Image (cartoon, rainbow, N blue to C red):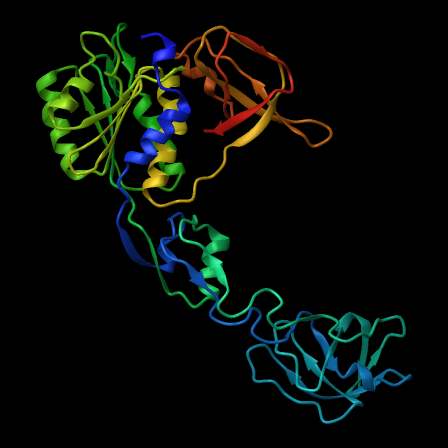
Length: 403
């Protein structure tokens, strides 16, 4: 099929996201939500901070009452987590700890490093500034009660989990993590550690796919290897489609005699959405939707094709099904010219280098073909180069996807 008759990577993106079924929502304890996708808005429980907060260990006092001798009498200690005390006069001060509420009647905090404390009094250094609300984190300066803190679709990393905790959320509603089955096909594949003949190859794609998924926080991952047998493939796929929301196959989607995956999936009621994309590597990629809304990705079996298609399409597709906000791809300038001979989008492995001015560049690292997975070691991802024929100069800016 000529490239002009194939869908583009952008069209493949749109086709995947428009056909995916949104995954269900579950309520989980906050401690179990790192890496999950938030499926509710979270609003501020209180002003943040909820009171005028002391930010330095020292003394608190009324700045307007300070006299020229800069000596104050300490009448008590205000610790963090205790109700606010109140000074009894302008010549007095209260010792305060970081995180404590600012005592009533006080508007300034001078840190302990700028004090001389002896016999129940504090002498403020002559050079120390004294201004209203010095070293005080003012109430509601970060946010007001009821303000939107986190939107539905946000990925919950450590900072977002802390924000949810500050809002009093012991549990949050997040996307159910999908059960993902990773299947490699082929008679030639032999597990690492098993005896191998000269005409066989190691089963490596499934390990790369599984590692990538786990790196992104997915934990419900199954693994299977099916030989090039139509009956066996039909039986195993029928089982996996009943138990998994996402099925990722590696191999068996091209045009050879043993490329049985599209035929078997159709027999099992999986609707083909597209087959083949105007790209290299990974042109034979297949995508379909199962009878119960399962997402089925048929990735080409060559290792570079498998990993590129996984990063470019499968991961964004799963994230979209989880309700995640779509993140824009990183854009970087090429560190060297790149020539594209064919009318296909070119996915080119790159390392990301930083120059002496702090600018990041995508340094091309071409492989010896889609089977040359050894060349991917040490690379950071791949650049998406527009179709040719064309030569893109050094400095050409394009999308970069990290492994």
